[in-house]
Amino acid sequence: MNERRKMSMHTIDLAYVGRGLHEELAAYIADQQDYYAEEGVHVALRDGCTWDVERLRRCAIIGLGRALLSRLTDGTPWVALSVNTQRPLFWFLGRPGLTSLADLAGRRLAVHAPHTPPGAFARIVLRKAGLDPDRDVKTIVRSPGDYRMDLRRLNDGSIDAAYVGSTMAPEAVAAEHGWNVLAWVGDHFRIPTVGVAVDPTYIRPDDPAVQAVVRAHRRALQVIHDDPDTTVRHMQTFLGGQTPEEARAHYETFIAPYFATGGQADLADCDKAITAVAAELGVPVGVTAAEFCQTADTTAWASGPVERHRRRPS
Image 1 (tube, rainbow, N blue to C red):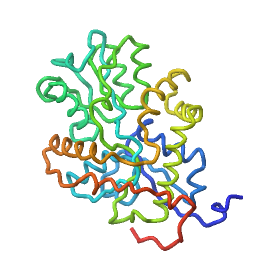
Image 2: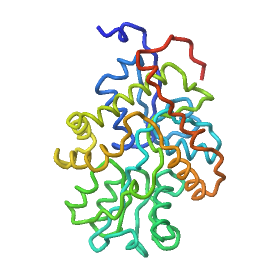
Image 3: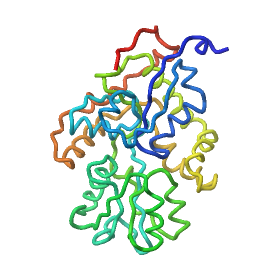
Image 4: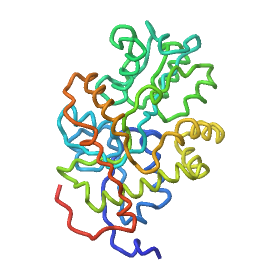
């Protein structure tokens, strides 16, 4: 029996705040490959998509975009301890006749609300394309993740374009319906969006349970980098509407080249992103990349769970 399994395990709540490969893949692989247990932690995965910040603060969370926006707008001192990718997995899909973001001028676009992380990212990318998202595009705000309704509306022509996330392989969906992928956000804007973050007010970054989660996720990132067959097999859990060949093409185009291997962040890109998001939200910058992304190398933790101690009460 693995020596780590013989020890009493730590426990922690880990909340995801979005759905799809972007948010969930590393945590899903860590769970399915039994890395959490091997690292000495029992993880309760929680659906925090509709939770308010106060409830999320008592968990470790996966969504770094939401953590960063919270830190900028309400001062919650979130810190990111591991970063999966800085290339947001969101795409603009357009009906036939639309081939670029510039073609969205005067068109109807289904998109996330401006104050949400995906919505802010969309607005930043639209502005880079020379479009004012409030004046040049007819935005139709809908709930995050409601992409199946977007597909129906694209089909019936009630919208011209949709901003969708990673619950689908957008290139495969576009090819099936005769639509076009107008842009991938990751080509235009880089920001730490998923990983592991905590609010030190309630959970210390050096808490053994948190350290174990970070180790497990970094092992999952190595799988994503080194084992395409295993990764694609797990991806198909999320891409039920796509063939294995389509899932592999999605992996090779958007996942393998851009997911980190060690959970580290590019602080220069992160500083630029923080400035851009703060400007979009109309708030002070208020935090540097180095203050938000505390992704120090954790190889010293890899030998096993550190000495147990009582966690601070929440």
